Image (cartoon, rainbow, N blue to C red; front, side):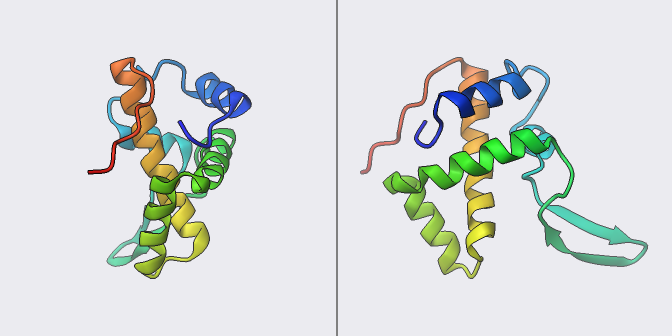
Length: 120
C-alpha cells in the first residue's frame, strides 16, 4: 500500500496481528484511536473530535503512513477533497488514515495484497 514501508508495516502487523480480534473496520479504527469521538454529558452533546485514547503506536503508524501516501494520486485527491470540505490539514490526514485503516482491514480479512483501483 502506498505510504507503508517495512517498519510501518511491521508496527501495524505487530499491533493488529491477523485482524481476527476486530469484527468491523470501525472496531479497528477505534482501537487505533483514529475514529471520531462524540463528547456527551447528560443532555449536552458536543461535536465529533479526534480520539485522545487508543493505541498510540498504531495511531502514529497510521498517521505517518497517511502522510507519506500523499504522493499517491488517489490519496492526494482524497486529501484535497477533505480540504475543500473545510477540514484543516491534520483533520484531513486523520480522515485519510481512517480510510486506509478500512483498506487494511479488508486486506487482512480477505487475505489479499493491496490492489489499487484503476481510474475509469
